[in-house]
Length: 135
Image (tube, rainbow, N blue to C red; front, side):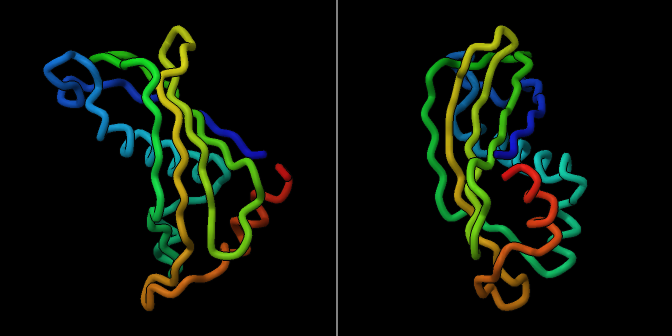
């Protein structure tokens, strides 16, 4: 199992009239967590795209347990629980506040696609090599 953590400070523009983070912003928080998880493996999503592989989101779920507020420092925990096989990769994500309380949980499924043709492709060998020690 591979897990990484990254922190995000809630900006004023991300809150709604109820003084809580607007629910749609969690998709962006999850994206930051995924990109940083790949970066912490020593890879870059930008380089993956330049090499011809893209990762579109095909499924997104979230459950909101507690609110986050303006200026909160959030920790996004991103976990790959199973070694990806074929063209699919699933990220499990959790968002915590500074007190360590779990605010949001979610799951995001992405497909590996060839950038030019949009055909499904297998996970790149270099990503598989970086993930292998965790499984």
